[in-house]
Length: 117
Length: 110
Image (tube, rainbow over all chains, first blue to last red):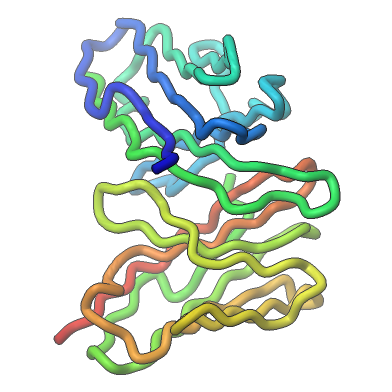
């Protein structure tokens, strides 16, 4: 049963520490999205990749956030240094985009619940 | 930033009634999608409607799209308690960027 896997599921860290969240997209999908969900801001698109190349990371605070896809089976989102306002649920999603049909459905992981104290 | 806004923010209905949620968006789109999120879980895709389609059905779901008004609606017929969740619209726009609306919290009471 193909699914997007995110690790860790929960993370509690102290302010100033580095946080790394990992995502294994579904094999064969060419697009990976990173979202952040909070009560106040809803679901925000942080960054997304097509064929491992970053297409848009304008939603990320560049000074502390970075997103990469070292290979087709792994996407990472790093926060360094972390701050209490980064507390949120971070979702990774993957999907297949074709030139003529655009996005098909996005498959979401279960999320990483981050708490920065 | 949100591409879409949904209303109502919250909706409470009785089991068996129909639930209608609306989504408005700002830019031209390739397609519009609806997702469901149960509390504490990831989002699950429900239905996709392309920009050249006006209406689509899937089981108890009916989606309409009006590109001239930049709006869409999701109708859930004969609702069940298990439909209780948050519902989000998402637009596939420029460069296939998938952005989500603010969501509607639906509560279906027995």
